[in-house]
Length: 81
Image (cartoon, rainbow, N blue to C red; front, side):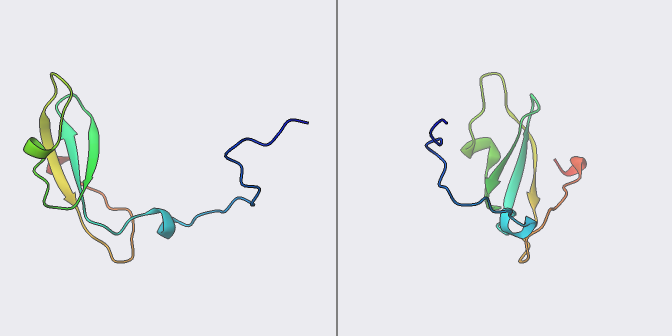
């Protein structure tokens, strides 16, 4: 029998609920010209100046995700990006 992996704690696995996994913090979603999507914490993000892009890529659009006290999944319409 082989030894347990170094990351194994020996404790049983825990199933997380959606509420435990989703943040209630405000986020800004950014789309680059080459199609990369990323998120930054907060709504006071200047995506053109404060985020870096790979060579040949640049800011294409962005939108703010609403803050939810209960957490949840929010959809941003692609037209807002």
